[in-house]
Image 1 (spheres, rainbow, N blue to C red):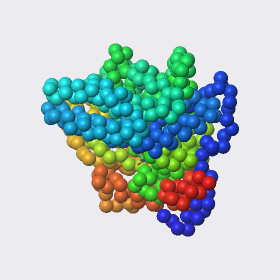
Image 2 (tube, rainbow, N blue to C red):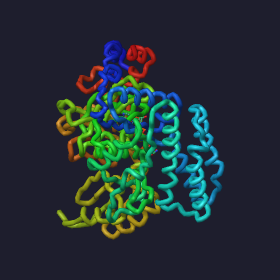
Image 3 (tube, rainbow, N blue to C red):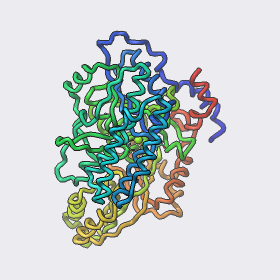
Image 4 (spheres, rainbow, N blue to C red):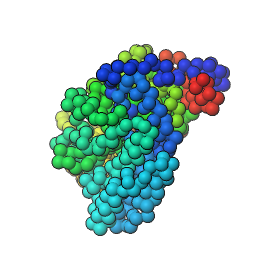
Length: 514
Ligand code: ADP
Ligand code: ASP
Ligand code: MG
């Protein structure tokens, strides 16, 4: 941390306390407006966090707000369900894995004073049966995968709704599959239709009145989960609870969407690896979307796109530090001169480098290659082209990139090129507004790549990012070095708030709460 300005940073930090406590109550309940509040995995995993959720909801109810709550599965549960699916698919017995999931939910339920058998018994039984079916057939279809994965959100929300009731908050638990319907995307493979679906989310007056008529103060449902028209369960992609929450917010025409997570906002880098990352106070939808799609997983990129489409502002809030105001993403973010606002990384990227034969200015080379990816339902993330080679980057967050998926693609590509896989690689990205106008800032960081293999440099056509494709093992170190060069506590941009370590330092927590 840069000692010189730590003091000024600390002096201003109390300015970042939320206004929740001081807003005057709106007692006219007929004018209640919806607010959608989404709580991520770590935000629903302990009694203490649920107490924060309850006090936040009481605060909103006192102010005349109608809260719509969206929850993730308990922390790590989705990863554990994925592991159980893999084991069952190999014919292994997964009884002890299910036991251990049950035990963890029982431990939280015991802290909350909620009866597990009464509230979670059916979901756990269904999970056992579906996994047993998979074990016997050794086949994990996308349809069954979606059903198993959805159990995590079912369990957390059933627990949470039962507990909120015991706290005197009248809560209507809703099955998200009754509320969100997936769009049918022609030509997409079943993996994407079942595991990374998108949903209809236009403002919907019928939906609004259906929910407004519920006899409850709070509506609570699952993120990540929706249904197909035929009733099958589908998922919105890993990290997709944010997107579900955005869909609900736009359908309800909510005042805003709050994403409650384990960090107090979007930062100039992942604050868990760069501790002096600065809080980004305001962002426009486009720059926030670019940052999310370049690896800031605090928000799912599709969540921002959905909110932007119907202009629902997003507030990123911190469940362990509920008094902090976080980041506001909206159409009305103050406009600022071109600048780099964040540095980000994504690992697990697969590069396909294709040598192409052809005449000077040959026609249709890119189209032929793009058609191969399209035919196999793969989306291309970044692309660099020349007369003799075309290289594309594929993101595992948007595609299944197992060898058995890639092999048929490579076979088709071999008809039109000489393809070669390069993996594992990572993107290191500078994200901001008017990236082309700040060439002089790029210059100050370029020597950090001196000893690195850089496979591709890609400047985003929307002028919001500059991306370097490097070896995966180098990405973390490069992000830190670049952040050190570009940001410090004196960085002047109006949208930069305090550093993460200042915001979460024990003495500052006291200052903020006074
Ligand atoms: P949740 O379970 O609440 O959805 P996630 O783990 O999906 O939370 O997202 C929060 C995480 O995003 C943080 O713990 C942080 O490590 C990571 N992250 C990555 N980049 C950024 C960034 N630029 N700003 C804030 N958080 C970031
Ligand atoms: N539980 C899901 C996941 O871990 C969805 C989410 O939390 O956003 O991917
Ligand atoms: Mg998340």
